[in-house]
Image (cartoon, rainbow, N blue to C red):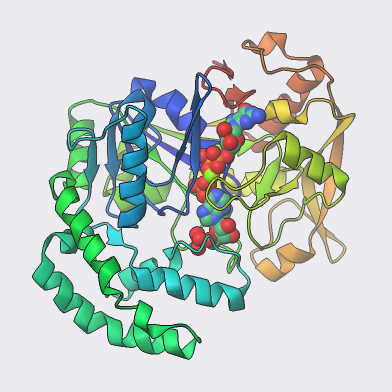
Length: 422
Ligand code: GDP
Ligand code: IMO
Ligand code: MG
């Protein structure tokens, strides 16, 4: 069984929770793109885990895989493994496999990200993601395997860094930081420790599937942060949609059994970029507080908005969702009225599908449908039949507009605050 889980919005949809929930029935969980810009939260019995690089199957002690399409900051990896070990989840090489071809986020990537983000106004996570992927595409990448061979590592550094130094200097940064020897030696130290973890993740995923095992592919970020199909330039630097799992893990599309879209009952965005249904009034602040909408990775306040069925229409198409998980329904409780955006208005025309140009999306005015809210606290509900009538009506409308069945409704951050359908 090969299942892919992706975010259907701008990230932070609750993928961590849903992956932890679903993976009970799988043997392995594999991250296929992104890096430690991701922040996936899993809460079990009041214990909160914030995962950035380690797949969200960690708490269920599944086999964890970091694929060749991921970019790895070795310091973050080390920190996260140490943190998990302290909490009783020591990861040995039988528990975690890292592909030797995964890209390494170098100190100069982070430096360049910080320097450029000031000018570009994208509002990145400053984790060096874009610049690490640039080097993959530009074929100047240092890969995890290079950290295990000192001689070739220093040779590559010699070759690559003069241009990076020139660039940093040009951007007004301190070029001495590019070849920060202390930091690079730290990288090599980590290389010695992760050597035993390196394994061909693509081969392992394929072998597991051939044996009839279950593999869950864990997406990071969200559909509209996709580098090709998202709201360019306000996107991340990898492909975040379901087919990216096949490309990045080297698994044939023929092998895919299920594709789950995770979507909030409303919508949030961190960083800049178009956001048609953003609520700029006090209500947005209220939802932010109730939903705890602050970035898992950077702590930045998330922008909040009404559920956007126009974006969802596109997300369903791009990902080919077989079913969707709707999260954070509890957060909408207590509102008199709840809005759903069913179309956009642009230059006097009504659109049912997002325009292809970001500039146009900035100008779209949402057309709303208004539904009655509910007052009840639904966090203890475990059966769909126990939900207030208006909450059920709201879900039905989401399902209708998406054209895809809802399989999971999440009513709280805990693993068991969940309603399973079907
Ligand atoms: P991810 O990046 O998609 O994994 O999402 P994040 O973990 O960054 O953000 C989702 C946040 O919402 C986390 O703090 C979760 O613990 C929390 N969460 C997930 N599902 C629910 C839910 O149904 N209700 C509430 N109130 N919180 C939830
Ligand atoms: P998870 O996996 C929400 C956003 C950043 C910025 C843009 C580019 O937790 O859903 P980057 O550092 O990737 O170059 O930043 O993408 N972004 C996310 N927003 N959730 C994430 O991950 C994100 N990862 C990146 O805020 O707007
Ligand atoms: Mg997140």
